[in-house]
Image (tube, rainbow over the protein chains, first blue to last red):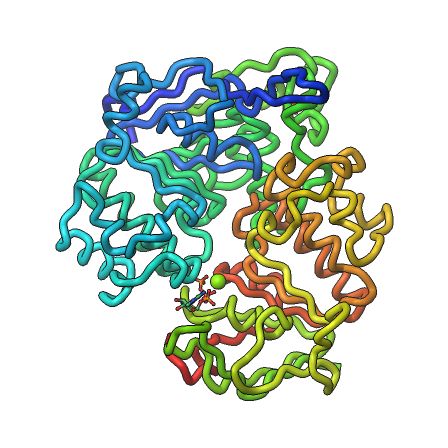
Length: 309
Length: 206
Ligand SMILES: Nc1ncnc2c1ncn2[C@@H]1O[C@H](COP(=O)(O)OP(=O)(O)OP(=O)(O)O)[C@@H](O)[C@H]1O
Ligand code: SF4
Ligand SMILES: [Mg+2]
């Protein structure tokens, strides 16, 4: 897809998120969980965000929606349709033009029947019924309370609640764990339709297989920053087409590929190395990797690695 | 030795809908079974019954021909999808890890559990890091059977591969039986030697 010609719905520019924490004796420290993160989503596009557990994917979603906890500090710029998203604008668009499908299922109101929650303030009963039919929820589900749902049912309720109405930007945070392959496909297919009608979709997922089938581009996150942004076809053609050593390692770890793990673990936000965040686990590391590593363009994508070719 | 379920019936308290009806199942030590089935079909509920975390309304669960112990360590251990719900938030990781046995250094190294995490609180670790503790703490010699209920869906694929490799090593080494609840067919194929669809052995239609 040619992104140059499509308007940019969401742009995240050099964003950082850090938490103010109290260390011993009321000393305040800042825990930088996201650093120099940049990506954008065009109208009509699904951008999948994959990457390590704990790399800040949910926090990125919460930063866009303006719903981070009070002790979080955001730097950098987030724009929606070219306008900087201030907290007033976030509030105005949240739940109507910009919607979140949250990762945690405890976002549902425990005291309200789920049908009512799906209709919300902007939907209609017909829309709710259509969403239920589409996601394989029986009509009786409408009358249940959240505790009566299985994990997979709760997830489908959250998806239904987000998509009634006609959102312009959908931020989906791990929408499919616990769903069968068919239901997960149905969900992604729905995102595809919304995108084809002109919405932008930011899809955070560990389900690389499904992302590969439905996303236009893929952003790879590690330790709070973007490591690579690549067209989906590069992931389909295999590790060689990818740019960053971490993206290649993700590819090789899939059960249908090598199922190969990678020694070591992601650095902790309170204890970050200098230079490349991936250096400790990288086989291509040289001394030069311990200096600043900026994002750069390479073969029609972007990569944060000085040795990538 | 084997894990047997005979004619299990179950419904959640104060509801009249049967989730499981007449469910029977046998898995031998050393066997690796994938338990599959649509969302809401009762896989998590069955996992909880098989590990003694829930009690059946009728029917029996036997390990090695005897009912699961009501007190003391259960030889059938369940690892759940959400590690943050499975640990005591007011205990440091070092304590949590050694709740039922003391894993050796080699195992911790293989799991990618770092020494300096031991003094942290659960909230200071990511989901993937925390799940490694939840797994390591049940891999001791007293565990004879492991039930993994969607333990890796929230993890990136590298961590998944790492953790599954290790679980497989330990199950082979200690001769453990394994039930894996998963929606990922590629994973089921990698990890298990056979699969059962719960809807095929469940007379209830939840
Ligand atoms: N506390 C509860 N009270 C009443 N009903 C419940 C409760 N917990 C679960 N259920 C019901 O039990 C059924 C099975 O739930 P369970 O979580 O075991 O399904 P599952 O197969 O694991 O589903 P999923 O794959 O979606 O997580 C569901 O129909 C659900 O509505
Ligand atoms: S910058 Fe260096 S350490 Fe980082 S990924 Fe590239 S080669 Fe590896
Ligand atoms: Mg379940």
